[in-house]
Length: 63
Length: 486
Image (cartoon, rainbow over the protein chains, first blue to last red):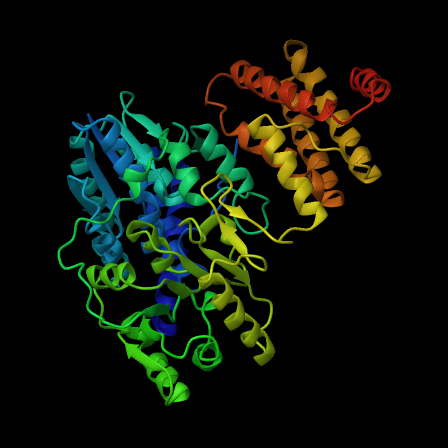
């Protein structure tokens, strides 16, 4: 991944996070939120693969 | 019956999942097995011989609209919808998620129904992580860099899928052209690794080959690796020069070719990489140079008799020593290296672990595998355990009288207790396996009414209390319970 595409992916990630926050704030469309969460994780993995590999045991929040 | 195996990790992890798929097919020959992998890695399923359909995650289709100047999120969501619909239409009876990642957990939840039996990471209805089974909770809590697990990934996969391996699960791949192509005897040397921090520089490999001449001047060296590593291979060739036969196949081998080269070799030499996970299927041994963050006991070579050396330095004298160890290993001498054995855990190790690491591992065996709790004379451990017990007693006492308390009060007490737990663990890291167990257990709590959640939380604190009591004196237990009741 070039420096430019990395920056582009980071920008996409920021926009997805903002979309997540907007949905959470409005308490609507839970399924939509889950799909955006999935896309966010895919982008995060893309960025992470560059340095750490894809099979990290990244911990998600517990109740 | 139809099963979907989800494996979003890389080539090596896909090979480590082969025995699971084969065991499932062996145990139920009529079962239909589908795989879901990333497009780049789907060739790692060539030759597995038991898979009916391979799905690939359409990552490019999903991501391309997001990279568009206008950030076409809806297009991306539509593409995801359409992919999910295809998977939902398959009506899988079982989904076995071998990925242990947040993304896979979200996908699994989205494509499973109430009728689907899910194994591995998923999500509760409200989006919280759901570690469905014991192995998932174990993985989440105790596996990975900095954690004390010693079980190999191949065995964790088996545990997750509920299968026991037999030799047949490691049989040769069903591929054409596995015949011998090189007449002389040779080692396969995998010069690269899946990640740069796992790989070794060309001059080091060259020195190793030169040093090995002292023990066997006739052995050939077949270099393998990816196209991106072609220049490194040329550099190795030029550095080794005359006297050792190098056969450079870097960037030229397909998966089939690699299996063929491994099958007729004297063994594989390399770092933690995909080839290490291919050798069991051609019944060859490997010698693994393990260093950095890599934990060989989780992902090292598993063929009986494989050897591992932990590399702490790449100084010339160290390379001489490694060449000697490879020679000893080739003669069946394992006195100075870790040896892969047919057992769980997979290795007979030589001085690989410190006393504190041994204690953590034994504590894990006690918590999860019914082994006796390890003794310790560490007073800090005792004090830390007591502090955890005291805080846990406060949580339990409050949970037990939840009907008399305001909900916000109870919630804040539980939050405070978790903060105390964390503070104690920061002071006494040797208690981490216990705390991580507690955290993972909390992922079992389903969404529900406040009372249900409080009740489920109380059960976990109750069991946690039982674990902590193993280390505490009766007098201190009574005092902590008295104080928690105040």
